[in-house]
Image (cartoon, rainbow, N blue to C red; front, side, top):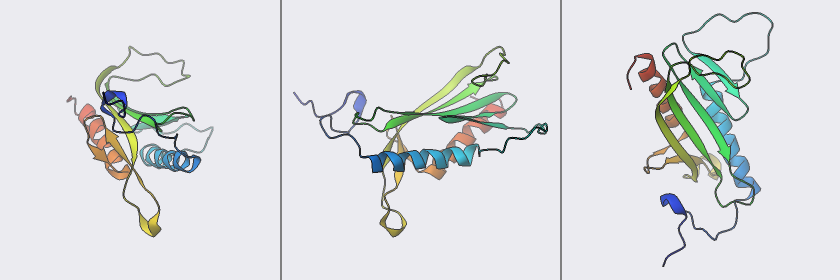
Length: 164
């Protein structure tokens, strides 16, 4: 019996050492870059912001891209420091309006249209030999940060057009 593979079809060995602090920090930077591309941090102001076709909201561990007919949420769930995995990124396409965390505005609710779960894996070394991270979906599809951001925006575009 082969117990070297983790459950769920993951290819990571089960009995290896936990990721290093350097690896965890590099993955967190990759998550931050993705979130900054999708929903950049905004300066706090007292003035009302003009309504946009897509409202971009940051959360402590993710972001929400809300359009009139649908939304896309991106959430990062880091694993425990002593876990072999680094964490997972969940991208969910929604039909309807999402209620933001901490918001008193509770609308009818949104319905999940599509969900994508991704795990960070080491990519090819980048410029100056620095290690890069890419995102692997459960079906084996891989995305670099730019490709994943484009995929999230394409999911939102489909919701805006009323498609699934």
